[in-house]
Image 1 (cartoon, rainbow, N blue to C red):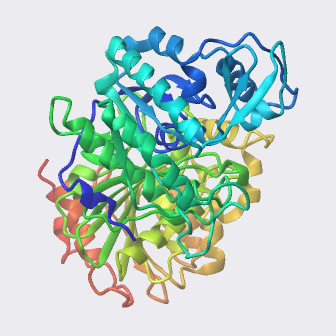
Image 2 (image 1 turned 180 degrees about the vertical axis):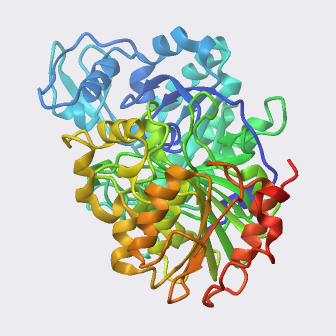
Length: 566
């Protein structure tokens, strides 16, 4: 597995918000649409060979098939109009970067009787062209195509110079790959293979370099066996795009001030952001702090991003933190709760962010459940399993308070051998405050007539329903409850304890897997202060795997609210 972060060991930071013009339809487009944060696309030109773009507009009439998408039809019309220069001129002052790939050159061009050229894209081939006759097709890879393209590129270089964009233009060279990560071939059954295609492109890149245009190359490419667009030599692993973006950021750093640059950077949390199109491709064994965003697989019904912040310390222990409610006037998404409190701990830290709150600004709390089609809890459970495997983790402690406590109980139940340390958690969503539950149901489960319909989702929305069947047999729970938080004592602790055959007081279950700690650890529904929280974590990591011991109030007096020095 390639270590793409090794290209850029020091954190590099691009401007917080980037305005990018995209010319192309492979690496440049993907880097902006699938692998970027804080991007505004200033313009987009695709399916337009530079040969077509740099000749005069054609007078042809186009009868575009009705089943072409609006976007595809627009590309065909703009190609005939040779729109690239006009589009760039219009937005040149609003462009931080021009990203360009040569993917669409592979279609070649068609010479028309009016002296113009059209890009022989699959969309043009399906279009009826009148007003000019097709004289011949010029194939990509031929000397004639290269000669025509060199003339066009020289003209385009002058355009870029005139518009002041040349120093901000980067051509992206991400070669086709012959095999996927399993070693299986991904070559197409038609046209040039990956070796031929990559060879054909080299003189094009050489010409651009001669013009003073920067070409950013990432030679290590691998096809993605599970790519959403299918297996092909140009459908690559996410890590290939991450490596390319690291090289791009380093190149951009040489031309801009300040010198510290990165393609995706979260200034608030001081972390590089890595975007993944497939959870199975996530690479978490990166030293230090990284933020990850797994895009939803919309074809599978997923709707929400799965975002997490990971701090890899090299420990064999992983603390997984889920946040509670997010009052919009106080916090912004993503929220990585307790980061400041825990960031100096020696364990690996994994902070989860509820993607439903990113998608629905009206929501303050969604318990990490997702909606009927998108089970976010299950997706995060799989992510935790992936991270634990890649980091060789032997102990996983799930942590959270209130709504984050609910999520932690759910996640621990799917991780045998783990523990959950939860503070004043909800244990049944329907038993929370009516207003919050109503907004949650109407927003995420609008197909239901009322919140009562949530009961059909069983353990997904109720830890009480879960413990009635699993009795926490494969994982352990340390349930910490402030005794003056009457609402959560009555509506959440009591039914949870009853489901286990326990009373709502400090006690340990018969099998030693569930410990209830009911005392004055903080006031009301408040979470423990920093000092107390870290002390709880230390205790939760002791005697790992052994039955839990009864609560000794005298021994652990330092955990009580009266001992807190604010």
